[in-house]
Length: 333
Image (cartoon, one colour):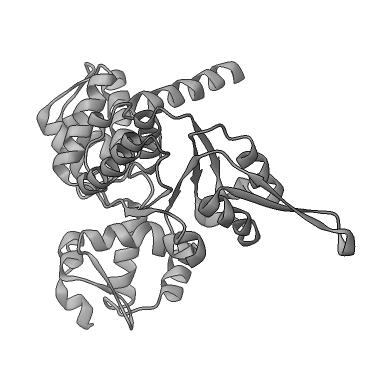
């Protein structure tokens, strides 16, 4: 049994990798980010220089990692990957930077979680390609500098506000990745279905796109689950009926709201009369971390116009009442 489980995990990883765009033209959406990034890439290639350091931020699943690897492919550079939590000590950063080859790209995911003391090692590395370190202690301590080869750092974060100003300022360009349009999600789903060699109807694509939270990662996840359902209980074709069944099983409605999303809105309307209510009170009511509510659930609900953040607290909109089919007068009880 353990061998089968390991094989399944490898298969899932392989599917995820296969669905990730490997060519610049395959990357759908984020046109403004792509246009500006393309300019930086082409200018660097024309001058024979490394690409400028880049910072991408936005909600999880919008394609920040994919974009970093595509830039590496366009630049003909090797991409080395790490994460903010993995860079715990100055020695960790020094080891990675000193082993970079000329024109390498270092991709740092979750860069906001880098230790603040470690950031100081990055400052001269990003700005002047110098690595400064101290050997010894006290009066006998000596400072050494190591020249680094030309390299590029591409960083990704979901919480750009947690990056210190000195670190942010050392990136040559900062781009925000926004939620995708329905039309772009539909294109991504059609492409992914082709890669998975799965038959899917146009109606099914539209339903899946509507429930995908404007996010490619979510769209592909729902597509894979719909494919599972079609293979096990149907004829292998994903149609509207199959999508309805899998969304019901996953407790996802046609707008992409999951159970916790609906519980949040329901509590806001029925328990707090539509608001305004503070984040701490919502956290206690839902038994969810405040950071999870603020960073995971609320951005999507606000993008749909179901919730508003005000100086007094969170407020449910008229659209939220209508979506949950709760009479407006409930707010006045």
